Amino acid sequence: MRITTDVIEPDKLRDELCDDRAGAYAAFEGWIRNHNDGEDVLRLEYEVYGPLALKEGEKVIAEARRKFPIIHAECVHREGMLEIGECAVWVGVSSAHRDEAFAACRYIIDQVKVRLPIWKKEHYVDGNSGWVNCERCAVHGHEHPQAASS
Amino acid sequence: MSKKLTVRYFAGFREHAGTGEESVELDVSTAAELFARLKHRHGSAEPLGHCKVAINDEMADWDSALSDGDVVLLFPPVAGG
Image (cartoon, rainbow over all chains, first blue to last red; front, side, top):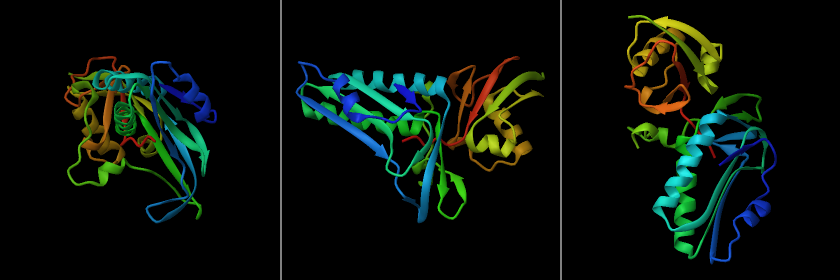
């Protein structure tokens, strides 16, 4: 798990996962889009609490390794102000076969989004701004899993 | 019994509280009780179930017991990715 203020370069990260035992590679890139909930978004600001984001991210990757027979897995998340089109998060997994690469990649991004202490503030075209709530919080009765008990 | 705690706020909580960190002395036994007391003080409407807590840099449950001198991190709903 890595947190960075630098531009994410997926091609370079992909190369780190290459392995002669791997027959499959799956990756996910999360990009900054120009709209959310009917608002025109200008840019996005990520706040990260580094010490725990790294610790929790490593836990998520370790869980993925236990659940799926994969070879390498890595996740990189940006911090700071990002412009439209920039890559905010990257997850990559290499494995012998595609099923586990897809599944582990999906597991990692889903858990990263709901467990790591990362917040985003949207800056809108109209000059306003607002913190974005977890997308699942809009679902009635949704409770976040508590990491300590999972 | 009253405990001296350091509370750190993040993102929207920091903006509500008007500070990133404060020292408090409160008669609370769990993280949930602390949250309820501070919520009242700072006027945040965020339900506890959507938030997370860490104690001394370890993710914790809301029913975790607090000790004198603990550093409690209060996290509003996270939204990575």
